[in-house]
Image 1 (cartoon, rainbow, N blue to C red):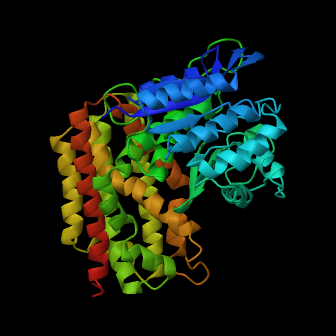
Image 2 (spheres, one colour):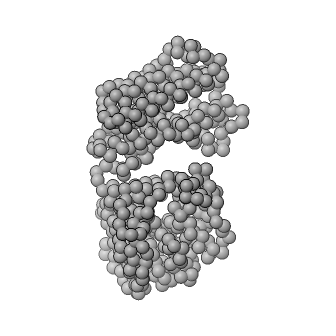
Image 3 (cartoon, rainbow, N blue to C red):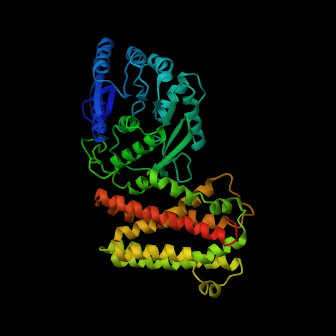
Length: 511
């Protein structure tokens, strides 16, 4: 059977934004097959829950048995379980039908802070269901309730370390994986808990499990349309797992799906409206605004991308062991490269069809002028004047790379040129950010620390965002075949970037 079968065991939301109704929309959008076992009926809308009618436990059991005995199940996703008896029915079914993959969304605390699950049911959830769970997806209030019920001391988190500690503590309750969702507690740019709305910059989701720790950051989106995000995220994870993805990739792609759902949502009702569940039901292999994450997640790109962004040259800048002669050669060649890179951005402005795109390309050239001046200042520290640099001959690797980019600009369309420029634009920022946050990076006494600071600075971050936004705005208009062609351009340019590091190592006989 090629159709992946998802059994959702949860409550019904009469307004359609959460619960079983949202789950089925998500599963349909992921081209999987949804089945349901209803734990409760709710009378609710965007303003809140008016009443709940619980399904008798024996009838819940009959629903689960009917589905599992006939159609079969690849992944079980749970939501509102409502009672001790419902949880016991579910735990029995997991063992009876040998459910190997499950996504448990512990719907226990309402948006207003009210506890939806009786305390006795929370205990049963911990004792009976969590040891059978593949991945548990609590939000922070639910995580706190679980830990307090289990007798684990817990404080209100103030920073990333506190949130990670909570996730690890919940992992100790039995599930194989825990995704601790941080949407209830946005962070500042400095990654501490925000105190006022204007400080809200980052939403942090923490995934812990068999492969260790993965921290997923996304921008804080100010939106009233977030009803059902928890249900929808868990269902998206279930679909991704059913399709064969590993856990980290399944969670990352589900996060992108929810982020796009919020960005493309439309208001319904007078309260907290739903996300847009069907934003990605078209032929392109990525959601709106998601081309760059899609490229970086491709199997044929990950190997060359790692070879480029984790190159020996880069690592030796981080630990300070790179010989200065190699760095000087790199700086000279990078100056010559940036001149050609500026030409390519000027060509991009010429090939743009709107004033907005022309202006952004011109701004990239201005930023490059400032970056070139910084290179000149760097070089002066190593005894190289501008007159010495401009008279140097381009290395063959420099010529090959820059002329490839310019040839793409001449022979292909505007977007192809942007894709050819992209590995350089985003790669330097990603490299610098990784080195900046790596505790193994030498800061004091490292002559290359200033280089790292340059590429994590706000000015370069803004340039990255301008270039990325340019690409993402136009990517959704492409055909599937064109996206594949653009991916090959990205791969070739990434390999050229790796070759630039190879060149810089060869200059001192290091490779």
